[in-house]
Image (tube, rainbow, N blue to C red; front, side, top):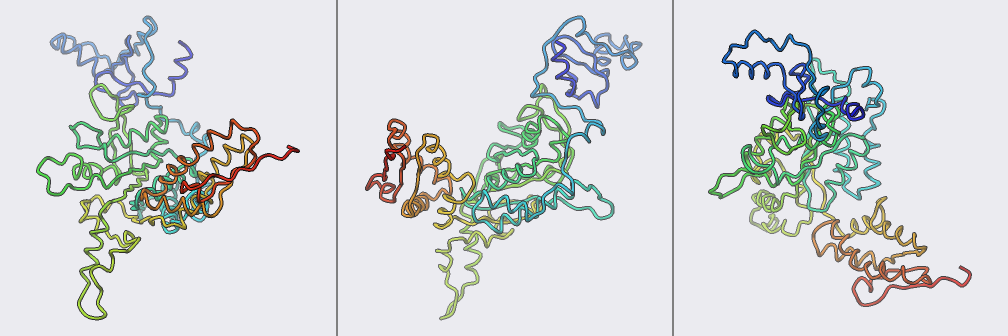
Length: 451
């Protein structure tokens, strides 16, 4: 029992009735079966039972009552506890980001270059925005000039590296990161997750440490799914209403967050989080926004020999780079929501050369993973140029971005990974373009006699 008590010393207790933490409700009266009651709720309970005849009992002046010393009870689930705020002396012991340790934008981009191919503008934009945001958080010198948050909105087709960028940024800065999906969010009172669940996931990632979570990053994926629904006759509980619910969270406010649950209810403890120092990054593919962009650009078309034609942009490969805030409003995003995401940038669609670079260059490229797997069996795996070209061609046909590469490679590597461990004489395997097409076999070289 003593070990459990030591483990729970860092976490706050909650009043069973009003759900307030001990830091705001005061000393709690501890009862059996995980029940803690604050003085106010205990006083109200006795007043109600005694018909206001027990007002002479003032629990606020009574010493701390701990019934657990006489009757043992189980521990509260750790997932629904919040860590106590550390004293200044203890906080200094834990290393934190400072102006001396935070990487400069060019260093952030250099690390992103090791994992993400291409997307030069996007990597530069996110590096500068993150650097400026944490300078704002670290210095906290908001006197007469108050620096606002640099929340971001990134657009790009599926599989172009949006989530990968955010994951790499969070790993570089060693800050809590919560990746959530906007498709599950609904208006308060309906089945689904409330907007506060976004912060609940960040708090869980930070081990329920509020101070640590208040310096984290929240990435809301599929943000285009909460656009206003057009031509609908039913109540839109997962569209414009969700955008409006996110407004105060994005800008910065004191928010009641459920601890260890996706939505608030009477049996779920809550804590207060301040979102003014939380960096929000929203991302989405925004399908069919290309048509809105083309429609806007084609309005400039005219008649004559040197005129711009309406079908001029039909074959434009990267027309999403021309996106503006007006296009996003036409798509269904409300102006108040877009105003709280001042940094807007796009990611390029992948072409054949980028697919080939993704196969070769990143530190954890998928082909390097298979090469390492076969190296554990003392077999060398190689790919010729025709294999790279054919894999890139197949990925472009699937139109699912870099995710298509994994499916393609898994398919043609299945037989190789199955057959090689059974034959110890194989020393090298070379994958060719004909094998990818299904017209030939991989080139296999046996081990030398001196091996």
